[in-house]
Image (tube, rainbow, N blue to C red; front, top):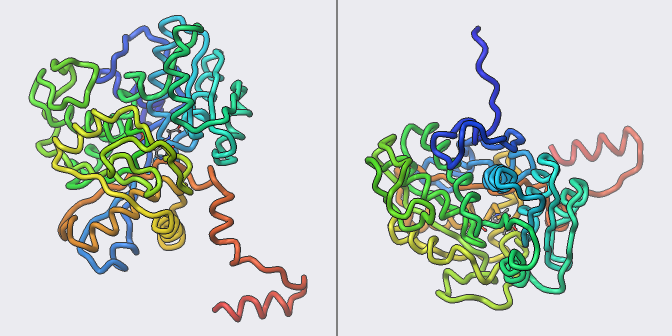
Length: 378
Ligand code: F0G
């Protein structure tokens, strides 16, 4: 059997479609190339004839989709001579920034909201040697400060206001199209700061473009002249964004000042990619909707227990919303649906154990007791 070349990350794979030179030093941890898993049991339970795939972005090196954007942002920062990066984060961006900064040998400063970040993510930022700055405020407060700090300190912002982040993240759409040999009919995502839905739309538009014209106003980089647009496929998906009920600016149509949800990753009231995400939604004929915390946790548990796929609460928002829209027929039978699972379930063990912890009880350490425990459950 011939050997295949080693996969060395998404910049190496898609360098013709990314703002990168041949001699640029790539800062990579082998991100991307994540599995697109076809669900078996949930569609059957729904009783609907739909193909549902989950794009398991939790299998990126730091356990979230953020690595796709971070490899680009840190590669560019280092290329431009930066010695330090900074971000505000609900947790995953900080974990990713910390890891890629460690890899590059530069410093990472991460601003996190006081007490509202999942333990796994905090552990990552600390272990990778980031300077963790906890603020008495939420993500939106952190974002406001980070956007001003570049005028006061020599640091590069690696939040998704950095356009290279979205360029890296658009590659998730490429991978989906390559595997399905077409774009899905519907692409469902959880929406927080709204960078990811924007990035996916940019990716789908590039792969369906016919030359140098830009098919979307969501792309801030090409200014109407897309260097990358080319006819790989003929179709684009309808983009559907789901938010948590307590952090739902896209549903309200205005910013939310005091967002709250169990899905701490998307506890965001002032999304930075507001205009771009609206463009993606409108251009694709899509919509935004919201899910309650209870729906989110139920979808997370369902996916873990019925399909063997463990994602963090925020990620399950895409499936929770999609299931509701499939049940109601808004997403019609016969559709191919992709739900992005943005982060790994192990990021937030506390919420999982709180949810499913009753399942554990202690019994005597005897053969009889264990035998009884097994036979009772069979
Ligand atoms: N899902 C997870 C697991 C996330 O961490 C985030 C964002 C989102 C969804 C929403 O994506 O912001 O592109 O709309 N997390 C950021 C962070 C804000 O700081 O880690 P988005």
